[in-house]
Length: 264
Image (tube, rainbow, N blue to C red):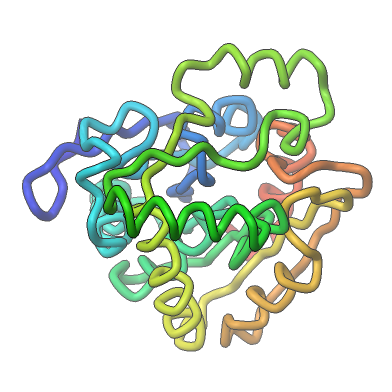
């Protein structure tokens, strides 16, 4: 656990290395920091820090108590500061929802070395008008603490039957969120776009070829938010939305190659 800006506790996983870089990772909606375990084991020469967004995973904050997206960005900045205190060059990584958190957190990280976006998600094709209408109905009748099941499962996230089973059996994965959390995500999109326009650090986009949740055009549009002149894109044909779990070794290789390009 790491103490957050407001005194609350943040659950953090750390895969150490002797290298100069630290990747601070935020997970996607319905996921948690443990999803980065397979990928982190292949990222040679860089520390990986992954934390649980409040309301997810092993975070001690209940979903119903998440009332401001700012805490997600603040928590990421606190983890980044802990990595920097170890003398590491800090890179922010976000997958799906975590990509929005990473962009919103970027202005709060001094000396940011770069940004990595995996399957960035300003919206999801699974959140149909009917589903959104149901959420709004719950918000009006039951308030922001009403629980909502996410409209996707392991079949939309990864290809492997074994990995799908692991996600299904993971008590921390695909848990219900609240109407209030979903409202906060809407505000987070606007904040991420504004923050992206000021990010000049190098950026890397990792894009699955068969993303069943995010339209390719939307992911590319989000990458265009970044003002950096040094932007690279790597695509993974046939891979599904949750790249860190669907193709962990290939994703790690792409990240290591990019870091080598930056002469780290």
